[in-house]
Length: 360
Image 1 (cartoon, helix red, strand yellow):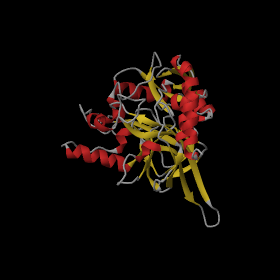
Image 2 (cartoon, one colour):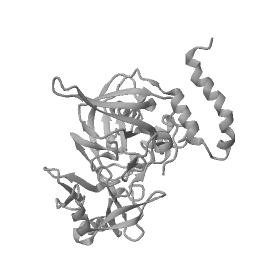
Image 3 (spheres, rainbow, N blue to C red):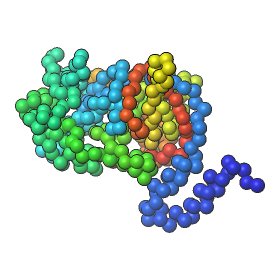
């Protein structure tokens, strides 16, 4: 009699021959990956952890800030990557990759949470306030909806801020080129790659992050990386360089176990007798890194080799990202809710089948 544990693998071996012809024609790839996810998913034995920090980055590639709590939306944390700076003529997005000074464009939030406060390293304390959650009426009076906003190979829509608001002049002067600020428009930007509806099992969208709504990272893993950096005479770095949204404490005895997360949950106990509030995330992929983490988020100075070289030696762990190291995990929330520092973090399911699929 065949042990039950072998049945999923025998099933996979049985169907692969039928998929191979179509795979050669670049078809049914998502079907194969779905099978891998289904057959290798398993309950987790990882210890529960907790959220130690939450970070939002309202304008793509600009400086973000920490919060103690945030509304989690299906598109990511509230305010996160809701805005983007684009070339004023082509409406093509700009990032730290082209101009590291973008990290010296600062964002903040007013005490009442109603205004996003914008400034640059050269603003001398002066800030421009724009609505953190602009109404349709405000957008109609102060922006122009454009349908040609380019982010990677995707064209989407966005509200281009008018000159009267003042932010375009502020950012153009600082970056020494003509740019405009854009707020994500109403057309959904559907997830691709590992978040494709055929893999995720639902249609989900996001704002202006590279690929997926939420990036979750572990303090234990940045600590381990820093031990390698300082051990070879380099300076330790902050986790901010990787621009995560949710940072968990992790297990210092077992860094990098996030590589196998498949389903995770954050939760908090409500008042006595009212149970528990929780939000579950599908972890869709590892996050492949470019050399943006080499840029100091405070000074915008880019180190010639670190942490890139160190990570390339031991963090090339994903077959779909052969020439990039990985740090952090990309997630898609299953529902909206509230997330707070101190919430319990649990890994519900693990997988050995993560393989990055290009999503932009």
